[in-house]
Image (cartoon, rainbow, N blue to C red; front, side, top):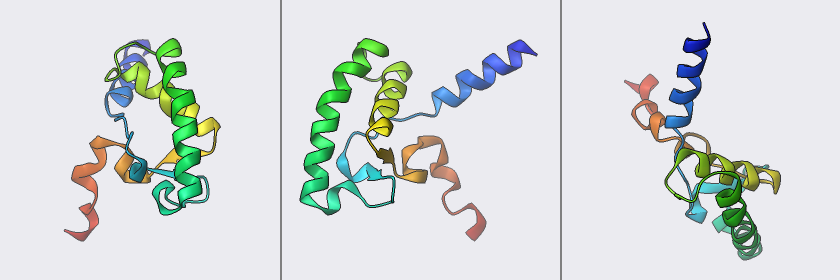
Length: 100
């Protein structure tokens, strides 16, 4: 049972992608970060704060799952989240699944 849980956790972390471009982030309310200059400045300040924290808490490799998870957690604390299906690369094949 523990092995299945561990494999599930590893599989879920493997699907995390780093959505660093501003168009891949939104506020809690669903407003895209790149839609307003003030939100874009807020994103830049938050990203400059969260990137070093993600290195400390996660990994020095910016492509690793630990770094990405730490970065997303830090950005979420500041009110900036990923944009739904675009945040996870594993969701790409299922974007229009029900339309088929």
